[in-house]
Length: 121
Image (cartoon, rainbow, N blue to C red; front, side, top):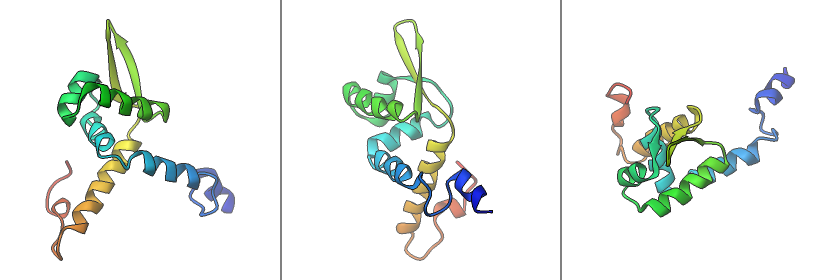
């Protein structure tokens, strides 16, 4: 039974706990969260488009993308002279979505947050 928990990393003593903390640290930057949100629909986008969407300079977005790529949260594909970025899988998007929901709870002032009232975004 404990062997199953160790395999998926959900045991408190799992070797993945420290790595999970690093993932949260990487996602602690608002620009990176905005990049994940911009890519969550599965589109492949170039740096300049992402920069426009997150309202940052392309050079800054490129540096954030490099960090996300290094941790394999985003991957790239070359199309001519453009590099297109996409989320590698759904996990980063899920983490960000749940963090946004938790943030909505922190400002709900005793009322049910918006995500409890509306369909999934």
